Each structure stands twice: as C-alpha cells, then as structure tokens.
Image (cartoon, rainbow over all chains, first blue to last red; front, side):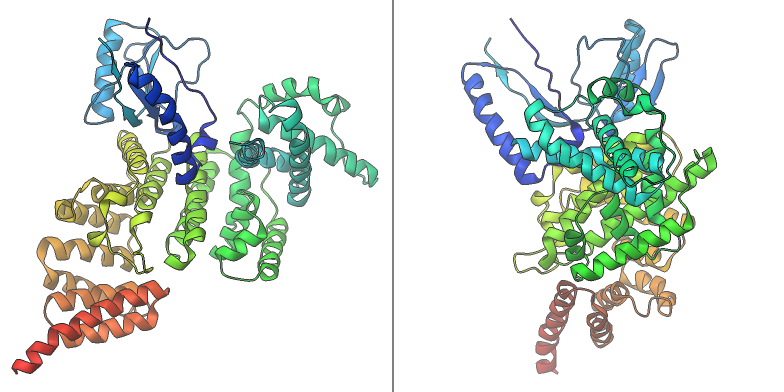
Length: 123
Length: 421
C-alpha cells in the first residue's frame, strides 16, 4: 500500500532555523530516510518553500481566479498533489488551468519546492 | 528541539502580533511591552507543563492583558478598564479571544507596531535599533553589539527614541487605504535598512551580520504574509533572500572581501535563491514594477549565473537603467556603470561616472569602482590616486584590504615595465 505523509509545522519557526540547526534536523531525518530507502520503501520526499511563495488558483469559478498566498479555506480537504518541473510560475499556472478545465471545483495551491529527494520505490 | 528552544522560538514568532494587539489595547508602548514580558514569563512556566497552547499569540495577548490590568488595578490608577467578561478565567477566554483575533485586527496591529519605529524624525540608526528592540525583541545587549556601542549608550538611545515616538503620538485609528500603503512603504524601507546594516558589516562581525540580515528577512516574510498581493513586498523579500544567499561566499578565510566575480558560487545558499526566484516570479505577474523588484531582478540574474562569465550584463544594464528613471541616484548610476563596463567596456563606464565625482566625493565605492575602470584602461597612476582615496574612505578593514590588494597588483604590474623602460 502506498501512503503519503504530509508534514505540518510552524513555518516561521522552521524557516528561522540557522543553517546549523537545519543541517542537524536533516541529518537526523536522513538516518530515518536511509533505513526505509534500503528496503526500497521510500518514494519522493519534498520540502516546500514557505507559504509566502505560494500562489493559489481557485477553480470554482470560470475563469479560475489566481490569488497570491496559500490556500486558506478550511471547507475543502487536501485530496492529492502533483510535482511538475516547469520553467516558472506562468507555466505552472497554465498546467493548473488545464487541470481545472478537466476537473473544476476546489483549488490548486502552487508552491515552489525547496528540496526534492527523488527516492526509489521497489518495483 | 528542546522544550525551551521550542518555547523561545514560539514566543519570538508570536511577538509582533501579541505586542501589536497589546499596544492597541493599552495605547502605551511601555505598558504593552511589560504586559508581553509578563505573559512570556508565565508561558515559560506553564507551557512545559501544560503543553503549548493552540494559538500562542492569543494566549499571550490574553495573559498579558490580564496581568497588566491586575497590575494597573493594584496601582489604583484611574485607567479605563475593559468589560469584566474579558478578564475571566484563561481556559474559557482563550477560544473566544482567538476567534475575535481572526485577522481583522492583527494585520493593522503589526503594521502599526512596525510603523511607529520608522518615525521620520528618528535617524535611520535609531529606527533600526527601535525596531530590533520592539518588534524583533532582541536584547539591548545584542543590539549594542550590532552597532558596536556600549550597552548603556544603546539603552539610552532606545529610551530616547521611544520617548520621541510617544511624543509624536501613535496612530491608533484604523488606517485608510492610502495611509496603509504609505505605512507599508516606510516599513519596507526600514526593513531594508536593517538588512543593509547587517550586510555592510565586516567579516570580523559575522554574527552581527547574520543576526540583522536574518531578522530583516523574517520581518519581510511577516509583512508579505500580511500583505500577500503587494508586488513590492515580494520584491523586497526576494532581494533580501538573494543577497543573503551569497553571505557564506562574501568573505575569505582571512576576512577579506570577495567580489561577486571571484566568489565560490558553490557556497551560495540554493534554498534561499530558490525562494527569492519564486517570489520574483510571483511579483512579475502583477506587472506593477518597483525599485525593490528591479533590484531583486538584478540579484536574480547574478544568482542564475553558474559562472561569472554567464552573467547577463546586458539585462542588468537595462534593469539599472529602469531603476535610474524610477529612483534617480548617483549610487544607482555607479552600479549601472559596472554593468556598462562589462557590456561596452571601461572607457564608456568611466565616462558615465565622471559627472558623479562631486556628489560621491566621500563615497568609498565610487573611488573603488573608478580605480578599477582606470586600471582596466592601463591608466595606472590615476588608478592609484583613486584607490588611495578609497582606502581613506573605507568603512571596514575588509574594504580597505580589498583596495590594497588592487594597489599591490598595480605595483607588481608596473615594476617590470619600469625595469624595461
């Protein structure tokens, strides 16, 4: 069974860690990562940039509305996510608009990725 | 993170919102600060036992308010008190208060707290000191160290600045749109000042540099979270991140200044660069250009170049040209001249900065740049004169050492020629 683990914490605390504090946390996490990776059980892992870098496409209206900042509503729930490799926000928004046409309602929060660990699941 | 470290971080990040609300409530900075301080003391006692509250700022506002009101009552002051229901037991009150704090007030609270620090009558250094003390909560000792002055002198400076702010009267009414945007501009400028104070510190003061720069970034992010669609605040945050990303490469092991072209780019902080680039990308969508965005775009072009020779100097020249129109200043022209020297050569660049001589006659960088152009044109005697002047005007020992390195090179270069002649 595949599971996604979604990481929550206070971003102003995490983003004010010094490089040393950050490195220490990553070192501790990597020990845990390695254990799972050796068993071929670790898929991609991601550290997102802060919500200040986010843009949200609200697709419950036509045309969808683009708003700066994270998705702040609590009425809807997180149901899935994509990881895309594009030239920038414009291309990411275009992809999101295409998705919105195929599946209206709700929103896409577009958040740049700060760290991407590809991982490797056993076949 | 240990308990204490977590609490410390939570108190720091709750500070602007909690203190801002307490200031609105008591309309007096000293009372608000004292109330916040007391709330923090209680948090240090209560949080390790009871766990962190769900909403730390709301908890601190509530507790701070209650303690201060008790205190005022004890002193028997004739201060108008809030309704009794607001001073009830903590447990019940927290939820109710948290709901009332749903963002309608706290945005203006935090902006006000930042804004009172940038009173136009306060000199820049006092604005920075006040902001670091009040908004960031740095100790007087830390701030004194950052400004290389004694603790007592800094204490006095901050007290005087506070008195001045109090005299001027804190604007408590909710600001209108125009006023809000003026406040935002003043606060952005102050955050940039804090950053520059740190950025221009020498290698011997590395700790100060990172404290001030990181604090400025934290405040810029805070401001952006409050004003999510302000392209210039995105630009400011991006600019600070992109400049700070280079900090590990800006000084050599011996403390000497390393110029952009000579920096080890593998030392640049890629996470900060990624965040800065993402923010510029976001800002561009608004098509509302401004000085911070342009400067950030210039910093981004440097950040994107893997090797110095990959730098898009043509684009940088154009961006400085736009900045010159938007915010004419001899310093901007001087920076543009560096780009021009790469695109059109040192003669064109030198011609560009000649008229700035009178206005920048006491500016270290003017003579450093002028000397470098003259050196590239093999006008070594004139270059030496410019470098001598630069050394006399250097702000830090690293700046002086850097120019001395140029002078040494001039000496070496001129020796064989002298021998041949």
